[in-house]
Image (cartoon, rainbow, N blue to C red; front, side):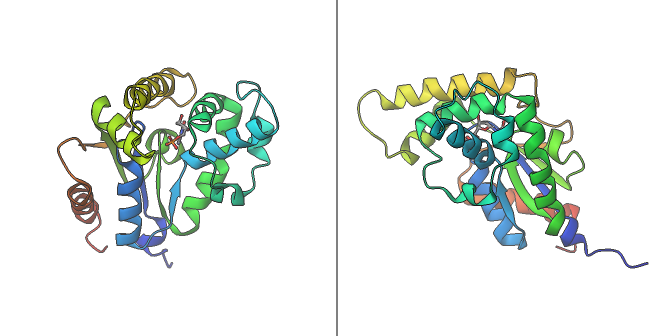
Length: 214
Ligand code: DC
């Protein structure tokens, strides 16, 4: 019996709180290992965007919007505003929304293997992922990164970014549905003291150790 090449089933989960460096690491891994990459936060952001565009309260039932979400919505340029940050966290707390988005994520991963970043990839979406990383960084460092990504405006914007990040992390970690937490078998990497190339090198070393043929 022929088995599928390991690469086609290679799933790498990258979880952690906002602005911990997940996207940078996941993109780097995907490129180095020639795997598709999915930023799963975009799914929640796109559902939130649809709710806002329709004039619906993002706290009201968003499952129908999640079930009808076209993949092309992930390409929208307006998914990273502070308003969508808040609304995405609200729709992400809804079990119906999470269930609706689960299939999309699993289909994506099963097609060719993948690197996926999010909050629950290693715990819920792919509990059997080949390698699971959980990135951490101090709130101060993460707030600074997010603030710089958003253009580094003067004034009280940095402290506001910090407050908003802390509030979203608390909501993501406290929710009943797939809360943010490391999988028992996740490898933690603290990105406070490592720059992006060093984080990628360390993660690649770990992946290659597990899969000598990659
Ligand atoms: O990673 P991000 O900031 O783009 O995520 C947007 C929101 O979606 C955030 O509140 C966390 C939530 N999210 C989630 O609950 N599960 C995921 N797998 C990805 C994101």
